[in-house]
Image 1 (cartoon, one colour):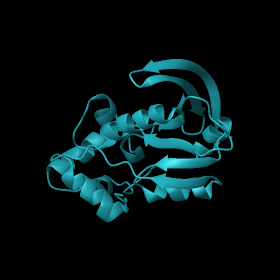
Image 2 (cartoon, helix red, strand yellow):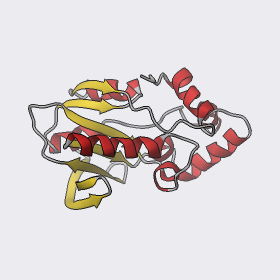
Image 3 (cartoon, one colour):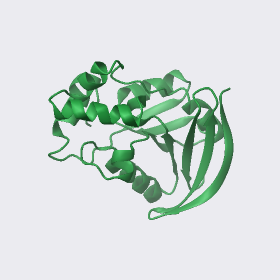
Length: 194
């Protein structure tokens, strides 16, 4: 197993106190985290968000995507319910990296959509891996998941890893700067809006 648990700590946030769990993937040389809120019951469905890192959206409040808005909404929903998990995966730009993501943004500024931009740079439309979720969720004792996502590939990936998954849409963050981006996710990547 290349993904192993490293440590945990409490993490107070504006939504309440989470416990942050650090994991290390020795094969990909990346660190990932799980944010856990409340007590997780093995026999209940666990409200979960699998969120890929988006520095521009999550930390710099970019309006080019809906990532930061989805992360905040997921944290709010989990805190409101009283328990849940966010897996925060270090897979910037659909796993092409930050510099390549900025290069893709430049191509989008010149008229390419997000899929065309990634492909012009020599990448698949989506390079993310979800197998890393399995050891993280197993460590947390979770097998039955209510997944906050619009991406059917995430649902399929977790089901293929042996988890019971139901999908909950997470529609937030739409604006005039990301209309075309969200349309491309729906039309070319199969994202389901509701």
